[in-house]
Length: 563
Image 1 (cartoon, rainbow, N blue to C red):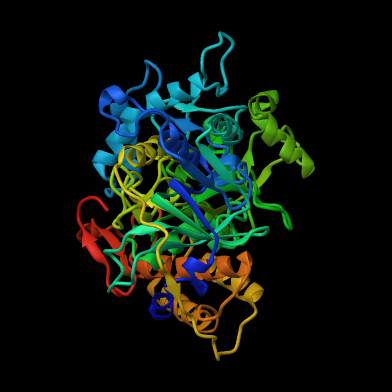
Image 2: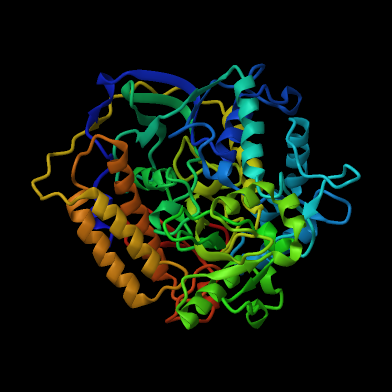
C-alpha cells in the first residue's frame, strides 16, 4: 500500500556540502512541553556527583520551532497535569487508572516511570514559578477528569494550563545561555549517513531545515531529539493548531525509524461546535466539575453507555456522542453547565470568555459540542530514555511512543508525559559521549516528475475529509481499503514532485501519516481503546500486540510486550 510513500528518502534534492552549515551538540525539533523540557535538561550542568559526563555548563542546544515558541498543542492545552501529588492520592492509584484506560496495551515500566516521576516534575514546576489554581486556604486545588478515580489533576485558571506551562518553560529556556531558539524554521528531513537497505541501521546526523529569511540550512548535531508533536491536522475536525501536520512522524519514517501503534488516535469528546467557527476544545475539567452531556431535549444519556457517565474514558464518551448524533441526525449534542451558575465563570474564566464571544451564556444556554481528533497515541518507537531504533535519534512527547498510553490515553497524562520523558531524553543526550559526524557529503537526487500535478489545497482538504469520515471514531475494513486507494492516487501525483514551500511539504507529510494510520487501522481487526472497528466490534486478545512499521516493509514487526 505504501509503495509511493517508500520511494522518497528526502522531500527535496540537495547537496549537503553546498548549503550553509550550523553545528550544535543537541538539536531539538519541536517547542511544546516535551521539546522545551528536553532542551532545558540537555543544556543544564547536570549532577556531576551522579556521574554526569557533560561537565559544567551542559551541552549546546538548538531548539527549533516551526512557528513561534508559544505556538504548539501545549500552548492550547486546557486540560491540566495529572500527578499523584497530594497525600490523599498515590502513585499506585495513578498507575492503575492509567493501565485501565490503556485497554491492555500499556507498557507497565513506562507507566511506572511516568507516575513515579510525576510528583517530582510538579515540584520542579512549582520551583520554577508555575502558577496552579488554589483553594481558599491557599492549597493547590486538584480536579478530576475522565477515567480518574482520584482528584489529581492540577490546573491553571480552570482551563488555561497549557498557556501557563509554556510561559514557565519558555522563561527557563530564555534563561539558559546554551540554548539557541530558531523560530519560524521548518525541519524538512532528518539527515542520515549513506542509504543502506531498509534504512533501519543508519545514524542520524542532524536535519535539513528551511527558514523564510535564510533559505535551506544544514544543522549538524551529535544528537537529535524529535519533539514535533502530533498529527491532528490529518483530520478535518481537530482541536490541534495548524502546525500539527505530523512532520516529525513522517520524517522519522522516511529516515527508517520504527513507528508504533499509529492506529490509536484519541478523539476529544467535547469541542465547541458552531458553524463556521474553529473547533475550540472544552476541557474535560468542565465535566469533572459537574457538567452534564445532554441531547437537544435536555436529556442526559451517558449513563446508558458507562457507569462513570460523563467521566467515562474519552473513547467511550466520543463513541456515545457519535451514536447519539447518528440516532438524532443532529449536528451536535450539548454540555449543560447551567446548574453550576456563577461557579462556572469563576472556575473557567477563559472558557467563559470564549463562549461569550459566540453569544453563548453558560448560565442560560446549552453549549453545542462534537468530538474532534485530539491526540496521536502512537508514534516513533522509543525506550524509556527516548532512544529510537536509529542511532543518534531520540524522541519524546506526542511524536513518540513509549507505550505509556497503550490503546487510550488517560486524561491529562500528556503534559506529564512531556515533562517526564522530555527530561529523560534531554538527560540521555547530555550524558552521551559522541563525536560530531558532520559535515558529511550527502546527496539527494530527485528527478523532475513527468506526471501531472494535483492541486495541493484540494488534496489536503480531501485527505482530511476522507480521514475524518473513514478512519475516525469508527472504522471498517472496506472503508479503510477505499481510503488506502485514495492515498495511493494522491501520492502518485504528489509525492514525486519537488516543492519549495512549507504548505506543500506539510501536505506530503500529511499524506504519509494518513497512509500509515490507515494501514495500521486496517491491520488491527478488533476494537480496543480508541480504535473502533464496526466490522470487528469485540476485543481479540490474539491481537494483544503492538504493530511497528518501517519504511519498505509492507508487514508490521509484531511485539507482544512493549512497543
